[in-house]
Amino acid sequence: MFGQGLLKGLGITFQRLRRPTETQLYPYQQPVLPATSRMFLAMYHDEAGVPACKACMTCQTGCPDHVIRIEKDTENPKVPLSFTVNSGRCTFCGICVELCPFSALHFTGDFERATYLKSDLIYKLVDGSRATGEGEGERHGR
Ligand code: SF4
Ligand code: SF4
Image (cartoon, rainbow, N blue to C red; front, side):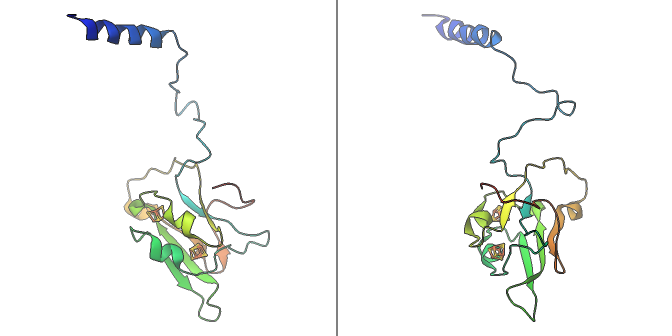
């Protein structure tokens, strides 16, 4: 029938009008993101501030986009001296999180880190012997 598609489309439109709105007034209203959101990579560390990373290099090797750069402590090869993330190159595939045998990595829900400078997207999760960045505290589901 001529116009059948149009009527069907209008029917869907009017059905949708009766439902509550799903639009959020960001930035006045903060969105509630799913727990599985992948924004910025972060590392867990224990109560004493020791990073969960054991410098096994699995994530660095497995990352298809060469996002992660790890420097080992020469005196203790199981300790990362620095752990650098170039999030500007990250495709948020999650492979690094999945590969880590120590469950040291996770993604945060922090999405408000837009910048004009690429260099601002490079950050350290371990700097010296300290853990930095988000993700401090308890581990939770990946
Ligand atoms: S999420 Fe994917 S691209 Fe990003 S650092 Fe991990 S492995 Fe690399
Ligand atoms: S896979 Fe895990 S333990 Fe190994 S270097 Fe990466 S974060 Fe550290």
